[in-house]
Length: 328
Image (cartoon, rainbow, N blue to C red):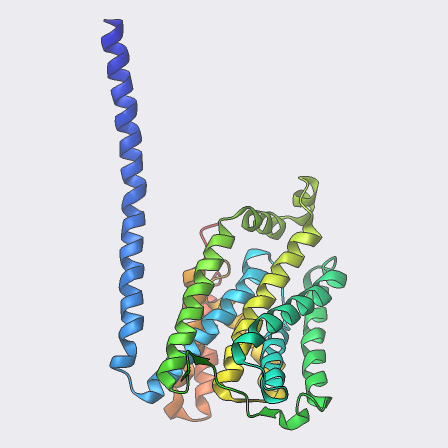
């Protein structure tokens, strides 16, 4: 009887485990199917859209990369950054200078841009991450303006007129010069940024960011080096912005300091906050809204900015946590 009882309990435990496993696998499978369907739609869009719509969608994927990069700083680590366009500018100017002045291949400029982006993240992060709240925001704002002013006044950056003649990338002798080409490039970058953001969010580093974001003092009491953790957030976010800047410069073949003004940082931050800080799908939705809303209201002319602002105000009033906020 004891053997029968033990066998029955073992079978029951195995059944419970199997049921739990199936309950975990089912939403995972549904998620994979949804992601596969969305990826298929994104890949097929160039077959049905005209050049104007393709240009808009390329901008959407580009801003997805930038918003995901800023989301690491703002959403994961809880740091208010008003100068994120500076990292974007570092990558763009690195590629522009190396290709236009020195004739270096575009692909070789990406590691250099990543290195300078890391340096920029350390420069802004090291001395300032002991600051909090508004003081940190003011320092990051100043850093962004410093980078733009330096770019405006150096001869190697082209001064106020900017850089021209930036090399377009090529793959095995095939030059990427069509709108569709850069659409797929930015789509690939967005997918890669989503994957990296997801892995970071569910990593040990991501959990440390969450603790620091919720309560810095409690996190430090638990043994977390809050300054180092914040520095990681700035460095990784800077890499996202720098790489996006490389491809932006290659696509436009010309850049100027006006591209990296304070308004650009505010727009990227707006996409993160509007979609939902810390939530990858929310940030993606925020990037879509950031680009598509002005295009939808383009027929209104100068009034479209007013309509855009009213729509955002309504969303913030009724969804203050964002369109798709994080559960925690």
